[in-house]
Length: 418
Image (cartoon, rainbow, N blue to C red; front, side, top):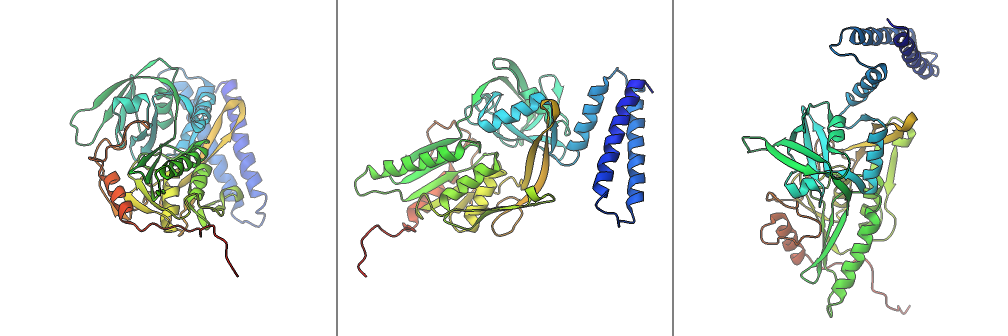
């Protein structure tokens, strides 16, 4: 074993033992602690043996730093499909994406079993314009053959400098042959909110993702819809369609703020993990932006994570009718923690629960009214017109709102005589 490799392994093993002993320090009465310490030594020795074997026998030379990073990536990614180690570039990418700006093709992807699947293409991006759809299985990016444990590598391959080319090959249900898309990466400023007044009294609000600016954008959009409805004499906003279809999620706090827009009180979401920081409950503050006006939420299999928090909160409180198909089923909270040299770790730290106490992980939110969606909806750009002739889920939402009684939770502002 080379001195360099030996030195690296001493540091790694020492770190492992240090962490183990520090965790065990508070459990002096634990009779099994010697066995645990012995297991740590055995696992550390195995790590040293494997690293040395790879260094000596692998078909191509491999750098020590690269080998250690691969070991770290494998350790984290093997926990679950959402946890990952990020180098400096990848960490920068995720920070940019949560702010709504980044360079790439505009895909949100996830590992599912032995597949890398598209959760949703983001509106107005190269992937969406080319026709990539939720549920597509990515099998190749350029010359890189995708494997199930290569989620972070796949993301890295998809992102890059604006103006550069990328070829994406996917497998789609009911298609015999793979589909190939030639995409040009671009700087993507993701507009996450779109609104439109329908029938002079029904508002349409679509959220394509949950980033830092989404709650503020959504609040402004609802105010505009109410003002637009009032421009017609004697008319008010009688209903709102909140479209979360193919919304892959995003920032948890953004989902909480969106839910709070429509709720007066009550639990929005709770989470339980092993650390104090991952054990919390978020509660709505007083004030419903619509004063009780009826809401219908559209969902499908591409609605995930933060979208499911919103749908679950509004459903459990009876604040909205959920229309569409069962959602994706991602009920886990990831925490991104910065590390040294610009790197970070995204780790699953908690499981979240709807107000009723249910976990939707790998289950999803079941709609109140099940309506299958037609292919292609809502994959249009945010600023494109709605198709009320073919979008079956939108048609159902409009029908429900037209037949619902107009209700308001706030009393009229009149003087009262005692």
